[in-house]
Image (cartoon, one colour):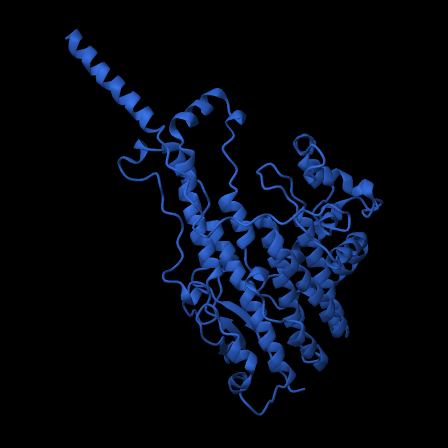
Length: 458
């Protein structure tokens, strides 16, 4: 009996050792399928770089953000002339964020500034409802708005964020709030008869955002820039939809909205950072038991290869017009499934299942949302400037070169005009016509991209 038990234990020991050895046999790193990863652009650490203005947007009111002393704490985090590791360890991100307190008095206003609301027209429009709050906020946050003005007028904006998981980032919520407040004040100015000046300023917002998008090293900065661009487009369209909009505004918008290049609405660069410059697992930050578990049951290359291949697919989807996709976009298949999933790389598979791949589909949704909104704004301006009330809108659209040339990238056909809803729309990246319906939270399935187009007899 004892011999049988010993044999069973030996067999179990051999199986366990074999299992452990088997999990030490990692795969080879895959070669980049999209070509060699691009070389990072040279960082610019001179104080003329507008990226410092984004960092210093939340500095106290009495700080002169143009001085060397103001930018030095941020320069030391990234400039290789300094000990970046030391200054990053000492940098207290929470204390930095505390320099800016979310304006509670504007929470309702910002929440109401959606891509489904009319910000200008009607007694219950966003601007009419919150005029007093906006006027007061324009005074209270005047110093921040002045800094934001310098930001969007900067000649150079080069993101020098380090491609590593512990790299600090600017307070992007402050940027988004400053942009929302500034855009809301522009819309209010248009309501008060200053449409031309308001449109010119909103176009400045838009141009700045499309300059930031191509060189953002992080997806979150890329997404905030897209949000600012889309809000600017929505506000410009609101102005054009007013009965009293001056004809010069239509011409200005038409001339100032040339076709966007992929880099100006896409996410290739931050996606590339996510794909090829994934931070390595830091065992030193774990306790000894966790470190041992990962050494035994986590295969670095095999895990990374699966992630890289999925992200390369994400990049292909985003840079390809949706009407050319050979199949619908999908999330990464679950790795920890099946009876024997645990036999190879179990911790790697579980980490991949914790990887929020759906978030990357949302990024693609927002990229094409910006592209289609920009196209439709240009077409709307073209229609408005020569609108003939004796002819149908569809007939006039058909005559416009802009309408014939700027096709919906999601269908490969002209954008759809709905006479009943008074909207121009794209069928969205689900590539199904949902009759101009959109979902809450910009869910990409069963959701179209919509731009209201209201015409008046001038």
